[in-house]
Image (tube, rainbow, N blue to C red):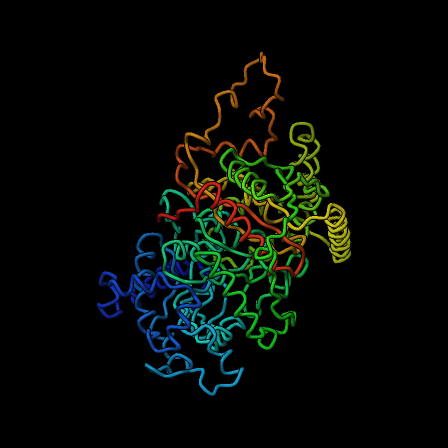
Length: 589
């Protein structure tokens, strides 16, 4: 399908793609629209291990699993607008699934390689619309790529299909990916399943909404600045951003191809921690380095600190030096601190090398091209997210003009003035100097981590809960500093849900905006709106605990590079401690 590069062509491409999606849904047999049966509801209670075992034994067919999850997928689409494509029937035709038969012991007499190929038999998996699947578009949210199906599948999709997984759908992303809301002209907005007035985050927004609604067991997302972790925080989902090279990413498209200094990494998400860990283990057992030349040939390493009951040392980073966490997000982190201490773990405030210095290096590397690549994918008339447009406008200003603005704003907004000074198109030599600074920063972090003897670092995933649609223009991309920092460091970082916003506990006090001039309290004064930086003021202007009541709140667990197994174990320690002290997270979508 070919479209010219005019505003009307852009509109036609968007309309055509939406119609194609709806036509595929309308063409489904009527059974897909029927209510879930009791047996289908039971299928949804099964873990990944149980699904695979039931399939292998012949107790449940892959087609029955597909039908149960396809029904939920269609409900999720109606509720949240989370899909870009469906492939329900197609997923049943791959050889490991098509050759399934009731009562056939697929393991009998099979060698290890055959068993490995069926290690995900019957597991329903959704794919972010940045990951190539042969015969299907990969739009990355741009109309330019509508009607251009991929000629081959990505490494992770080929691995999944060899393992017998049911790749059932592709999910929505924002145009250009770098955003805090999932919206594109091609597919429109994706709504938060907890409250449709709010965003799912970005850029793995559609997959997160689908998981929260039970339409998938696993979402294959990507993350460069928080694109897995922020949506997980917004929607009460479990996700783990990998270190570069640990999870197969070849065949994943990016609006910034060739950017190696801050790599985009494919990473999975799940509806619970047990499934996330089991999926990770099974993917690594499939030797992804045989599919993807960028993967490190590192087998799965069992980490049993949780079973041993060993007491751990946790370092808490309360603020990223840019935007202090909102009361709701800080309360979630405080709950984890209290729960870990009750379990006997050592929990200390951690003061790493300046987060702001690391973020400045990262921002310059991410936009070293002056924003050219993001704009190069646009068709005439196509819009990017307002926060991205504002950033691109700033990048395009003449250097001298930016220096004048920086000089005038240095007293009132020092951080903003610094960004105006440094956010310019970089030469090859300047990029290399920044990479050297990044490496020195990583070394300083490691020295501080080792010196403190930490097992893990804990932070909030973002200063705010989920944002109302359209509010990310006020917060800007700088709000993602809590996640972006660990992309700069290339540390594995997992997010898990802890609790929900409570209007009674998380509202800002009246004194925050109108502080009393006199106080008899012996406690240090609480932060006030007037004491915030201009960037933080903009972020806090959209915080409303009353409107946000009931939205999920997560925390971020960080480990050292290539220690994904240990981070998953740390997430389990946190989850168990919080469950024992406060009760488990109740999704309730």
